[in-house]
Length: 181
Ligand code: ADP
Image (cartoon, rainbow, N blue to C red; front, top):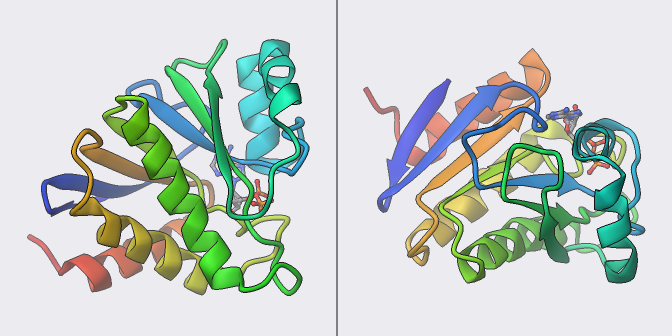
C-alpha cells in the first residue's frame, strides 16, 4: 500500500476487490451505459449489492461517457455507489478528457452528498481497453488536481485487482505526489 497526503487529502493505492471496501463511504463502479450487471467491476459490485441496485439504476440509464450518477449501496457495506461510464479506448474521444471527467464528476457527487471517503477502480482499464499507464496517470493526476478543491472528501483510495496494475498505480502516485517517506 502506498499513501500520500495531497492538500490534506489522503490518496492511496491498494491491491484488492472494489466490492470489499467496508471502511469507505462510497465505491465507484466502472459501469456500462445501461448501468446493468456486467463483467469485471460492474459484475463484482452488482453481485455484492444484490438485485436492488439494478432496480435503482434502471431509471438513471443510459449514461454518457464521462458521466457519473450516484445510488444507494444496497447490500454492499458502503453508503453509496457512484457509477461512472469510462471511455472505450479507440472509440470515445477525447478519451483522456472523458476519463478525467469520470474522476472529477465522481468526486463532485461525493462532495454534494457529504461523503468523506471514495474508493475507485481503474476505470476503462479492463474491457474498455485503456492502457494501464495512461489510465493511471489520468486517474491520479485528476484526483491530485481536485484535492485542493475538496472540502468534505478527505480520503481517496484506488483499488487495483492485479499486481501489475497495482505496480503501475503505485509508481505513478510516487511520481506525481513525491517519493514520501
Ligand atoms: P471498464 O469496462 O471500465 O474497462 P472493467 O470492470 O472491465 O471496467 O475493468 C476496470 C479495471 O478494474 C481493470 O483493471 C480490471 O482488472 C479491474 N477489476 C476487475 N474486477 C475488479 C474488482 N472486483 N475490484 C477491483 N478492480 C477490478
